[in-house]
Image (cartoon, rainbow, N blue to C red; front, side, top):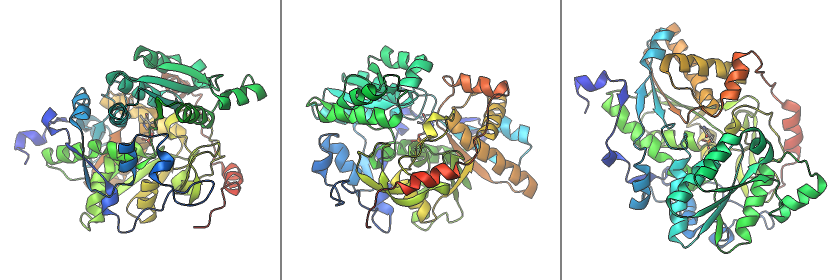
Length: 460
Ligand SMILES: *Cc1c(COP(=O)(O)O)cnc(C)c1O
């Protein structure tokens, strides 16, 4: 219970012993089972043996587990201790600037060494791979957020790490690459001559700028063709979302310390992992019939609106069409989003567990344009100090809009959001905004329609 002096704090901190001992698995609380993942060739549900070349068995088990709580190994908690528990802040200065009666809180995941929430799962994934005798991980990265998280995690457990980095980012954004190399990873621009997939693309177009889809193909091929190597993914999958629930479990405790209760929860969604990690422990109450009035809002960019404009059907997880088929809100795997500055939100699909909650009306979704998002980001930086990652700024846009609404309606609501990372490697985007060069992209209706026509045909 909070004491009077606790409530007036700006930071709500927990002790290291309060790092959650268990992850929360939302699958235990669904009334109906999630749609099965299908083999792209046979159309039949896939089994553990289909995934075994790519992932260690413990992660495959977690992917389909129905257990509500899964113990976090001490070896994982020992590393999480380096930055967890992360702080929950009351945004008193932003509240004041807005003149809103709302209470605004943010959980700050930018305190991790890589600067985002992504190490929460990278550490767990590296741990289980190490435990099962894997010595090397392969992955892809776009702008480098996931690659840097995994590079650090691999170093912590003595694993080698190979990162296929989309070539344009490799050339234009060297700092994340340098972080990865500092943590000991081998980083190559993708397409690379190191894989058959890369060689094929390079033969067609030696100057290919690369894409996330190509980089995924390279990393998966790397893992599938080497006995010592497995593949690692930074979002979308059930086990990744579950590893992120440490965020929401801590936030729940911290709100109790603040003697407050959330009316509105907000998070940005790319593949859905930081949003899920933050909100699933609260969504558990709604699924159990409690806290019926709690609103949970997922925010996506209007240029890549998979929840708000996509179709809830089976589609490939990657751009090329190699992965199993998953039921999700998708813009079509061939959809190529505009070159948004929030690189982490440029995904054609969405985590199936997030989609299921959306489909069942447990959560809402909204889309916001880029310029308004940066306006919110700068307002936040100028009041609270922290320069937010452009991805997280999407959540801030909606938080500010909700707080303004509280003011108009004279309602004191409590709004909490996940500040998924800092924007120190995104200053080029801030520069574009500050010099008036940042542009909005129109809702790409024609491109989405075209991509939706190329959805795989699945009877389900
Ligand atoms: C990668 C990333 C995202 C988007 O990924 P999710 O899986 O949707 O969380 C959001 N914010 C930051 C800071 C990221 O690095």
